[in-house]
Image 1 (tube, each protein chain N blue to C red):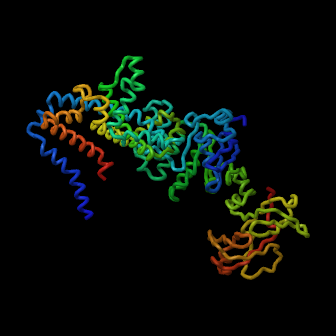
Image 2: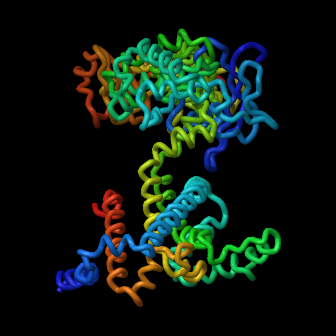
Amino acid sequence: MTGAGLAVDVVVRRGSFEVVAAFEAAAGETVALLGPNGAGKSSVLSTIAGLVPPVSGEIRLDGHALDGADVHVPPERRPIGVVFQDLLLLPHLSAVENVAFPLRARGVPRAEARSSSAALLERLDVGARAAALPRDLSGGEAQRVALARALVSEPRLLLLDEPLSALDVGARAAVRDLLQAELRRFPGVRVIVTHDPVEAMTLADRLVVLEAGRVTQIGTPHEIRDAPRSPYAADLVGLNAFRGAVERLDDGAGRLRTDGGDVVVPWPDVEVGAVILGLLRPADVTLSAERPTGSARNVLSGRVTSVAIDGDRARVRLASDPPVVAEVTIGSVERLRIEEGRELWASFKAVEVRTIPL
Amino acid sequence: MFVVLAAIGVAVAALPLVGVAARTPWSRTVGLLTSETALEALRLSFVVATAAAVISLVTGFPLAWILARSSFRGKTVVRAIVVLPLVMPPVVAGVALLAVFGRRGIVGSWLDAVAGVQITFTTGAAVLAAAFVSFPLAVLALEAGLRGLDERLDDAAATLGASRWYVLRRVTVPLLGPQIAAAVVLAWARALGEFGATITFAGNLRGRTQTLPLAVFEQLQSDTDAAFAMSMLLIAVAFSVILALRGRFLR
C-alpha cells in the first residue's frame, strides 16, 4: 500500500497457537476483525498496538514500518488509540485525568491537557462525570471515557477490542450510535475486533473473518452476506452451510459429502473431489410431518433441537444428517406442532443450494 | 485444652511486656531517656533505621519489580538468596558482612588499599548491617504489592504514549502507595531493632554505632532503670508500627 492506511501481514504467536493475518485498511475506513472466541483476533490487535511483537511479517502505517525485519516501534511511540475490551481505565485517576493522560505523557501542559480532555468528554456526553473515579462510572460512561482517552491524542489509527461487549443491552444501543458517529468523524484507520456479526456489519466498511488463527474471508458486509466462504461466516449471516468434497452423480448433479451426511447440489464447475461450500437459505427448506413425496432431491429427517421465533417467522433447527435450519411461518409451527424433540422431515431442491468453490 | 494452649500463648507474649512495664521507673523515665547516652542512641537509631529503610526501598523496588514482572531461569534461587538475611541469625549476618567489608574482607581490603576507607566500626557499618537485614522485608512487601497490580494497566498506559519511566511514576508508584509505605515501615522497624549484626560488624561505640538496642544491652549491666526505660520506648515504637500497619496484621 502506498497511500495513507494500515497494511498488516504478520504471524503472531499466542502460546502454542499461531495466528496468520494479512489485510489492509485505508484511512477513513473501518475494518472489523470478526471471528469466534479464541480465533486470535485480540492477539492480532495487541500486535498492531505494539504490545506483542509479531513472530514474522510486517505492519506499516501511512507508509512507515511499525514492525518489520529489524523494526519494532514500541507502543508508546505508535500514533494509536486503543480501547481495550475491559477498558483498563487507570483506577487512581478521575475520568478527565484518564483522558488527559495521553496528552500529559506527551508533554502537554496540565491546564491545556485538562481543558481539551474536558471538551472531549463533553462531546461524548459524559462531561458531567469528569471528576468521577472509574469505579463510580456506569458501564456506558466508562466506555465513553475509554473512547475519549483513545481519541484525545488524535492518533492515526484507532483500535477497538469488543467495544460493546461489556455493556448491558440497554446501554449498548446508545453507545453503538455514539461509536458510529465518532468512527465516522475519525480521519484515520479504524480497526474493530468483535465476535458479534451485528456489531461488525453495522460499524464496519469491511470485514476480515478470522477463524482458528487464519483469515478465511475479507469483504464488505454485503459481499459476506451474499457469499460467505466458511460455515462460520454462513452461520453469521443466517445461511445453512455444507462444506465438503463434491462428487459427480450420473444425472449430472453433484453430491456434496459433508462430515454429517450428503447433500445433492447442482454440479459446480470444479474438479471432482474439490472441496466446496454449499449455501442454502433457511426459507428454502420445507418441513413436513410425513415423508415428503414431491420432487425435492434432498430429504432429511431428525429431531427438532431448537425453535427461535422472530415476529411471524420461526427458525427451526433440525438434528438431521447433515443438520439444517429451516425458516417457516408461525402458522406452520402451529399446524405441524413444532416443538423441541419432535421428529420432522426437511426437504429442499438441489437447485436451491448455491455452491461456492473454496 | 485448645483454648488453654491459646491462652498460654497469649500469656507468653504478654507477660514480658507487663514485666517491662512493671520494672520501668515511670517517674524518672523522661530523665533517663534524655540522658546523654540515651539521646545519642536515640538520634543514632533514628538516623540508622531511616537510612537503612531508604536503602531498602531504593534497591528493593527494582528487584521486587523484576521478581514480580519477569520470568527468568534461577528466579527461585535469586529470591532465596534475597530472603536469606531474614532467616539467618543476625550475628552470622554480622560475620558475613565482616568477611566482605572488614579490613581483610574481599571488598574491605580493596577499599582500604584504593581509597583508604574503612567501613567497620563506623555509622556507615551500622547502616549497612541494618539495611542488610531489613532489605528482604522491603522486597517481599513490594513484590506482593506489585503482584496485586493488573499488569495490563502498564500495557494500556504504554498505548497511551507513556514511556516506562512515566508509567512507573504516574501509574505503578501511585497505585502501589500503601504497599510502599508498608514496606518502608516494616524495613524501618526491623532496622531499628537490629542488634546482632550491628554489634558484630559495627561494634558498640557510643555516638558512632551504639543504637538503642545496643545501649539497652550495655545499660543493663550498669544502669538497669535506664535499660528498662529504653526497652519500654522500643516496645512503644514497635506497637505504633503494628497500629500503623493494622490493615495488614490486625484484620
